Amino acid sequence: MDKPSFAVQLDRAVQRALSGRAAKRARLDERLAPLLDIVLRLRDLPRPQFRADLKSDLEKKALAAVRVEALPAGRQTAMPYLTVENAAAAIEFYRRAFGATETMRFEDRGKIGSAELVIENSTLRLADEFPDYGSLGPKALGGSPVKLHLCVADVDAFVERALSQGAKIVRPVEDQFYGDRSAQLADPFGHVWIIATRKQTLSREEMQRRWNKILIQELEKMPGHDPIRKGFRTITPYMVAQDGRALLDFVKRVFGAKESARDVGSAGGLHAEVRIGDSMLMIGGGLPGKEFRATPTTTALHIYVKDTDAAYQRALSAGATSTYAPADMEYGERSAGVTDGAGNYWYIATHKGPRYVPKELNDVNVYLHPLRAEPVIKFLQRAFGGHERARYASPDGIIHHAEVQIGTSMLEMGEAHGSYQPTLTMLYLYVQDADAVYRNAVAAGASSLQEPADQPWGDRTGTVKDPFGTTWNIATHTGGRKPA
Image 1 (cartoon, rainbow, N blue to C red):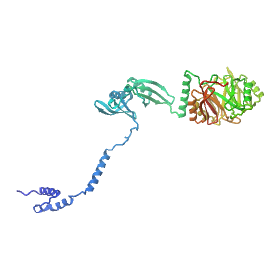
Image 2: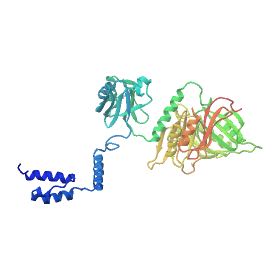
Image 3: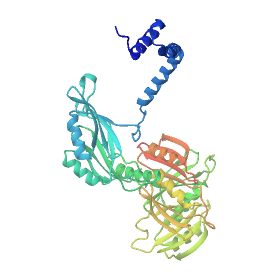
Image 4: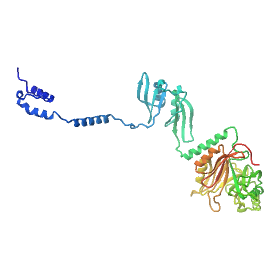
């Protein structure tokens, strides 16, 4: 038999060495000896610990190679997941109506177990109903409490396209108080979508002011009980003097006030109600021989009369002090000013027009003199839904006159200057819901003096003081006994 080749001898020798069997060197080619020595030295390598460490490192690298990010790049954290009857048809509808792009679909037993759609920069998922797993769509459940909101460039065009593809109008396209133009649509599968285009970027204060105005308008349309006591307007001045009867006599003598109610108030003094033209005044104050626990107020009133000169003379005869004599004003009034014995300011005026009272104002109008008018106006808007009707300011920004309408009343103001300084005014404010407006006023920065409570004269009232020193008795007339 021929002698095996060198390569065959080497292969056999290596196999024997690795298996632990010693090769018979005498029979081997002498060239194999040094090679076998190398094989024997390498046979037990690598060491067991090295092999274990290497295996662990390789497994970690393999895992790292397939690991995915918890939140893939470009994916929003929250994603709507819709359940519908016939997901394939829903995908086609969203594609045609909303411009959606399908990026993934997983099928399960002839249904869509999960699909992913992209609409503009947002992703949503949807799936067919699987009743056995409790997965049902809006139609099976009788509707869904969840709405989806889509921001689009042109809401009118978007809605028109969606309607052409089978969507139904829930609310028509219209401008909203918060600055959007929007509509609500129901898709053929039971989900409701809010489609919106931003038209204005508004502050929270402006949105609140607009909402308050809408709320007041809606409440005024509601049938049923009138929240304002008969004969009153939204705002009624509540004037409190140390000598209540003297102040009551003054308004009767000078302005022909007609007394409609008189009682002993909660502070132990006089409470009276009088009418001057189309307006009511509340008057409180101390009585002889009775303890009076209230703090007197000072009020500035812009009061319209048929003859300013005659009313001015009657006021002086009744003990008032002149602040300025009757004169024709450039803004269309003949006006005079007096201060009564209790420190109240009376701006007596006759309008030069068809009536002695301007169309926008009442016979008696509260006039405030804040240090700065702008924050007061903002507060009235946020707290009471006030609407600024007029503003007259100088080039340096001083507001000399402004008018804010609240309900059926107009509140006037001009920034304090010279002898016209802030007053400690108290006002009675009738609203549809005293509790809600009280909370709104506190949220707008007012301090609570008394939480809303039912009163024996038939009002529910709560009291706050605004940041500028005016006290507001916020009331809703609920019925019951009126003051005697």
